[in-house]
Image 1 (cartoon, helix red, strand yellow):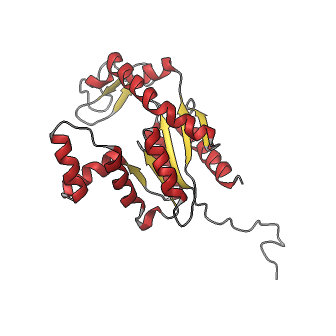
Image 2: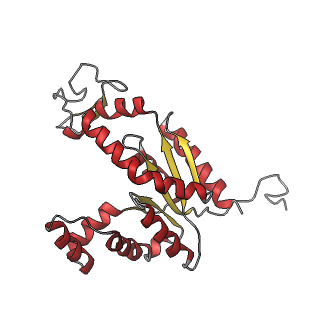
Image 3: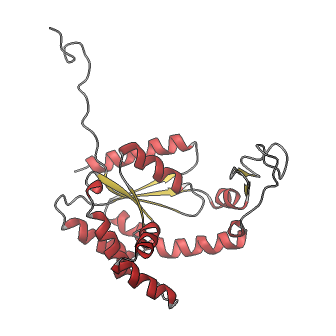
Length: 238
């Protein structure tokens, strides 16, 4: 009897487990879209420290109570507390094949702590960092050109995806609005803060040979495919 091999059909590939991933990028690069696509591609959770913090505070957990007290005092939540929240989340069973970190590690100290944590784990898989780059002018157009329909939530861009009639939603005729944080001044403040915090993290993973930088121009689908290929290449590298 003929077998798939004798008929020239390649054997089925084993499911790919991406392990720990970090996706980085300046405001406006499309990081949220790519994180969602990659997490769905490999059926792994997307872990946001902002979401973790809000969940702990809402549930009244010991970590959440500690964080809420600091926030009410106007104090930033320290790395040590954020690390404990991340450590607890990484102990959940759904993280075994991998996970996509969003917004963490944000500082070099957090990255170094996470490296030690992963090296001491049962699988000892190191984190792979993915950085999406887009030219400043294009980022500025993506952010400052964004307009939103307050009724249906449709998103337009005056430069890249304008409505058929200027300032009006195609679907329901509602006047479009621009969010306050989509101004050029706010964008530049956010970009400076991102670069100041994240540059040491990028250099850290570059020096370890575990960083891939990707041009963020092109269709979302093509960017997702290139990011996935980079992850598989880096994970299989000796």
